[in-house]
Structure formats: C-alpha cells, structure tokens
Length: 336
Image (tube, rainbow, N blue to C red; front, side, top):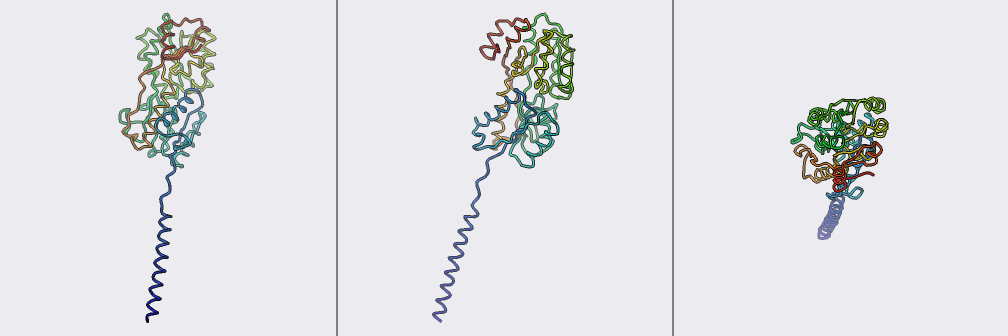
C-alpha cells in the first residue's frame, strides 16, 4: 500500500510539473505581438510641382509630430496620373488594406476616398472648397470621417496685386477647368470682386488640357491680363498656357507659387509645402488618437506669400513696382 501511495504521489508531481511547463509555454505563446506601425495612404491626383510640394510637406509635418517615414510610420503613396479610374482603384486599395488614415491631395482624390469609405479617417490635402465639393457638412464641424486643410487663395489680395502691377488694365480673363468644383467656386468669388477693382471679367473654361492651347489663344486676344484659380489641370499644363499668352504679351497671375515659377507673373499665394506640413500635422494627431475628423475643423491658411517672376515681367515688358519687389525679397520669393 505504501508503495502504491508513493507511486501516486510521484505521478501527480510529474503531471503537475508537466502542466506547469505547458502553462508557462502557453503564456509565452500568448504574449501579445508588437503592433505593426501605422500606415498612411496618400492619394495624389497627378504629378506637378504644387502637388509634389504638398506631398513633401505632409512627410515633414508627420516628422514634426514624431512620425518618421520608414521608421515608425509607413506611407503608401499612389499617383493617379489624372485618371479617374485610377483614383477609384487606388482608393479601394487603401480600404482593402485597412490603412490607418488616408490623405487626398487635390479635390478629386479626396472625393474618390470619400466614395470608398466612411470609416477610415480621411485628411484633405489642400482642398479649396470642401463644402461645395460635398466632402464635409461644414468647415467648422465636418461631422463625418473627413477633415483637412484648405488651399483657398486670398483672391481679393490677388486682384489688388494685379491692379498695382497693371494700373491701366481693363479686361481680366479667367481660365478654369469646367469639371473642377474648386475652380468654379473661386471663379464665383472672383466674379463678385472684380468690379471693386474696375475690371471687366471674361470667363473661359476647358474640359481637359487638350482644349487649353486653343482656348488660351482665343483669350489672349481679348484680355489685358489672365487670372488662374487653384486648378490642378491647368497647373499641370502651365507651359501650354503661358506659351499662348506670352505670344500676345499678356501676363498670367496664378494663385499658386509654383505656377509663378513655371511662367506666371506674380501671386499672393499660399505656400504649397506649408499646406502639406499642416496636413501632415493633422494626420499625426489622428494617429495619436488626439483628434477625430468629425470634430476637427477644416484649417484655412490666412496669409499668402508675395511671389514675383521678374524674368517673365522683363520678357513681357512690364515694370514691377520696386516696393513690391522689395516686399517679395523680404518675405516671399523673387524669380530672376
């Protein structure tokens, strides 16, 4: 009997040790795996200097807030090359891969993302009029999964600048893409302000870059100066526009600094890189859980930079007031 009891005690001890070993191993197996670093999907409408600058700024804004690309955040960058079908498929890719946040650079990109998901946080990268584009309910209280940064240009400051440089100009032309909601919104604002600066406004629209050369040629024969709103289609074909207008010695005043560099005369425009930085900062706060799109107001940049292209002015025989040049040299940029 004593031998039997000793055997049972020994058996229980062995089983207990085995169970303990198994439990310890299971505990090791059950140790939570380190969470993968967050992924941000960036959808850009197409390649051109302004949108490229926004993209660079987004990375910088993320870094300023503790997210370094390749270290503790992944970036899935997709360029649609101005193709609507690409925008749709790339947006769906982000949804299928369940990115932690998505950024739409330019209105069509943000709209494509909005059509693809109502759950993943979306940050607009430089969208001129989010309400007119039907991306948010209001700029103060977006109410859904979308917020972001607006690139609404200071249009009245633009008109004042044109009048300073061209005091005798009478007719102002504006050219824009008919399918671009943001451009249309800016043309509407422009229409309500031109009389204050004694301009007669003539409107010209294109459906694609294929129309630009012909329409720009017609416009150049009928106006004294040209205003270009924040329009990605025209920005991507700026050389085509200025070739047509320069042949008639007609200056172009765009809203974007990079478009001045590409042949425009001057602008009081928003710095595209800085817009990108603000977008990146907003994405970082969402990743940190510090903000939600529904309750994060759309951010508007209130100050523009004076940018002048003296080389173009010289080629067109237009004298830029010295006071403007000095101001641009001090707090903006001068291309010579």
